[in-house]
Structures are given as C-alpha cells and as structure tokens.
Length: 292
Image (cartoon, rainbow, N blue to C red; front, side):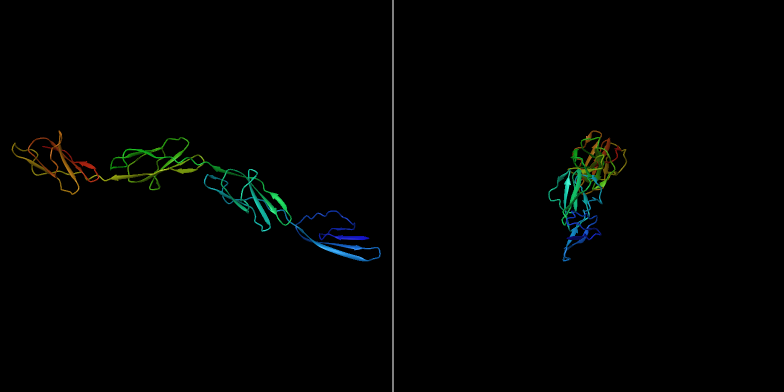
C-alpha cells in the first residue's frame, strides 16, 4: 500500500505512520491522506487541524507603578475573546482577577497567566513590580485658648512634631505657606493641616478648627466741653459719640471710676482720664489719656 500524506503546510510524507508534524504558525490547516492499494484501488480522508497561537502576555500600564496607599494602577494585557486570564500577586492567584486588566492597589510582583482556550496554550507574563508607598498618619490638631477672640489676639494650633514630615497649614482649604508643626491663627476661618512624607504621600488632619475673630470697636476720640485747666468749683465734660451696643467705662490713674458708664463724664477734679469701650463681642478699645 502506498501512503500519501499532505499536512497542509507544504510538508508531505509517504510512510504509513509519519508521527508528528510541527506547525510553526497558528491557523487552520487541511490534512489529507490518500491510500493506494496494490490493485490500484484508492481511498482518501481529510481533517482540519486548528493550530492556536500562544497568547500575548506583555503587561502594560498607563499609570505610574509607584503610588500612595489608597491609590492604584491598572495593569493590562491584550484582550482576546478566546483567552482566559488569571492575575497573580507574588505568584499566588488573586481571587476574581480573571479579566484582561487588573486594578493593583498593593505592593508586590504582579503576573498574569493567559490561556488560549482553543488550543489550551498557556503563557505567563514577566513580573511587574508595583509599589504602594505608605501614607502618613492623619495628625490631630490641638489648640490652647478660645477659638473666638478679638482682633490683635491669636490662637496657637499645633500637632506633634515629626521631623520626617513636611507641613502645610490651610485656611479654608487654601495654603497659608506655614511649614512648621505649629501656627498662630489670627484670622477667621476653618483651619486644617496637610502633612507629606519623603515619598510625597499626603494625609489631611483628622480634625479641623473653626476660628472666629471679632472686630474691635474703633478707638474712641474724647471731646472736651471746655479747657483742661480750670478753677476749683468748675468742671469739665469729657464725651464720645453715643453708640448702641457699646459699654462705656471711664477711668483715671486709679483705675475704673465708679458709676461712670455713659458716653460722657463730668469731672470736678484733676487727674488723667481715659475711656474704655466694649462691644457686643466683648472686644475693647481705649481712648488716649486726657490730663486735667
């Protein structure tokens, strides 16, 4: 019997059992056998052989492979409907990581195993190192004093000092430009602190501090109804404009004058007189001294 094999790729054989035929390229090949008997009778058979390609396993990412904890990067390989995927972290399968891309959030070495399901061809990618840098702990802002005060005063805001961190205080989410672990707040608003480490990872303070700065009243200007020098038995009226919501307290060199709580004061005596005024926010201002 004569055997004529045609493997469909330009290779032939004339032995009954040619063994194997290697196909260098993927594709569909028609394999045909013609058998011719000694009496010249012949028969033939043909089969289609499908050669599957090994899948592509080149891992790419459009995002940085080094980032701060809480962020991530997306690893991906070429998608093919005939392929199945399994991502690995440090050579261990990742649960439910079976698509052509994977969102990596943890530090480690990532690979992907891709199987061409037509020919059960298996390939594993080279490892890709991902680094999730640690984020500093969120500092808690402490303060001493009252968060509501008058213009000209301040309140000390601070956190525990850590020399490995950089500091940035913020007022109403805008950077103030102060880069130490403490800050003396003098303006109204919401204060927070942002800290960053050498990797550039940032944490916001776990709390914020609302500061209210109240306006002080305008400096009172004392008017005189006469001369600052007069004879015994005469008097001098010291006065300021009357304003609602203002508390008046006239004083001399001995301190507050009893019951001198209106916008004017009549003195019959010598002395150094001045006026303290206080508004509804309990903020005060003092006039210049008048010598009588």
